[in-house]
Amino acid sequence: MSALSRLRTRRAALAFIFVTAVLDIVAMGIIIPVLPQLIEQFVGSNARAGWINGVFVALWAGMQFICSPIIGSLSDQYGRRPVILISCAGLSLDYVLMAMAPDLWWLALGRIIAGITSSSFTTVYAYMADITAPEKRARAYGLIGAAFSGGFVLGPILGGFLGEFGPRVPFWFAAGLSALAFFYGLLVLPESLPVEKRMTFSWKRANPVGALILLKRHTELSGLAVVNFLLYFAHHVFSAVFVLYAAYRYSWGPREVGLLLAMVGVLDMVVQGVLVGPVVKRLGDRMTMVLGLVGGTVGIAAMGWAPDGLMFILAMLPNALWGLAMPTLQSLMTRRVGEDEQGQLQGANMSVASIAGVMSPLFFGWVYSFSVGDGAIDTRLWIAEALAPASGAVQLAAVRILTDPGLAFYLAAVALLLAALIGWWVGRQAERQESGAVHPPPAP
Image 1 (spheres, rainbow, N blue to C red):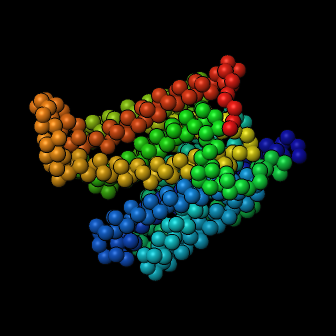
Image 2 (image 1 turned 60 degrees about the vertical axis):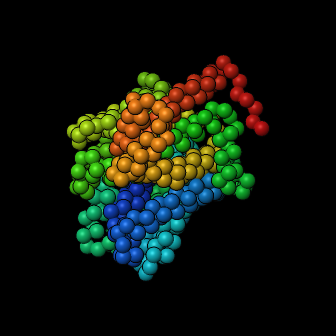
Image 3 (image 1 turned 120 degrees about the vertical axis):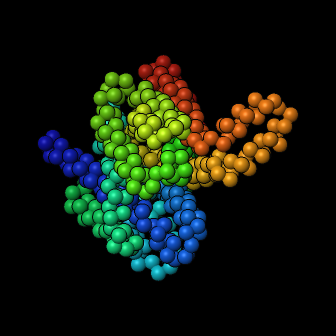
C-alpha cells in the first residue's frame, strides 16, 4: 500500500471513529429526558420512578464494569473492526427493544444490554491507540472527547423535542442513529490491529479483576488508574445532585438546566477539540493533565460556593479546563503498555470508571441529602449531640460545613485536588523512567 493510500485509509478511519462517537453519544443522550418519564408510566409514581431510574443507572454502570475488559480483550484477539460493528448493531437493536418494551422488566433488560454494547468505547480508544503515534494520542483522545461532548449537547436537546411526540419516539430515533453508524462503518472502517500483533483471549485477563491486574504491573500505571478513578468519581457529582442543587439554590428549572448543560458541552468541546493539542505541545502530557485537574478543582469548588447563578456560570470557565485531563491521562497510560494490550488497558480503565459510576452517585446523593432541607436539620441535631463537649465555635464551624448546600461540590473538588497531586508525582516518575533516570520495577 502506498503512503498516499495509507493516509487516505487513516483519514477514513479517523472520520468514522469521530462520526460514530457523535452518533452513539447522541443516541444515548436522546433518551435522557424521556427514560424517567417512560419508567413513571410503568410504575405510576414519580417518587418510585426516581428510585428505579437510579437502579437502572447502577445496572448500566455495573454491566460496563463486567463487560468492558471482556470486550477490550476480544478486540485484542479478533481485531477492533468486528467488535465495533457488532456493538453498533447491538445498540441499535437494544433501542428497538426499549422502544417496544411492554413492561418495566423489558426496559431493565434493555438497560443491561445497553451497558454491554456501550462498553465498545474501550475498543474505540484502543483503535485510536493503534493508528496514532504515542506523541499524538493526547490530541486524538481530545478529539474523541470533543465528539462525546458534542453528542451530549445535541442528544438531550433532540430527546426533549422528540419526547413531545411521545416517550418512545426518541428510542426509535436512537435506534436509527446506531444503525446508521453500523452501516457507515461496514463501508469505510478498516481493521487497525495487524494479525501478528494480536493476543489470544484469556479469561484471566478479561474478567474485571484480571483486567485490573494489568494496572498493577508498573507503579506509575496503577497510580494513573487511581487518578482515573478520582476523576470519574468527582465528575459524577453532576449526575447525582446538579439538577437538585440548581433548583434548591438558584430556583433553576429544566430550561435553565438544559441550557447550562449545553454550555458545559460547548466549553468541553472547545477545550478537548482545540486546546489539548497546543497545550500538550507546550507543556507536555503530565503538566497538561495536572493543569486540567487543578482547573477543575478551582471551578467545582467555586460552584459549591457560588452565592448566585451568575457566579456559578462564571465558575464553569476554570472548570472547563477539566477537559485537558482525560485525553492526556489516556495518553500517559497507553504509553505504559504494548500494542497487543491496548484493548485490555482500555477495558481496565472502563472498569475503573464503572466502579466510580456506581459508588459516586450513591455517595454524593447521600451527602446532599443531609446537607440541605430536612437533612440539614437532622445534621444540626447530630452535631449538637456528637460535639457537645466541644466549644461553641467548633460546633458552629461543623454545622456550617456539613449543612452547606455546596458540600458535595467541595468534596468533589477535594477528590480532584488529590488526583492532581497523585498525577503530578506519578507522571514525574514515569518521565524519569522514560528518560532512563530510573529503572521500572519488574513485572510480577
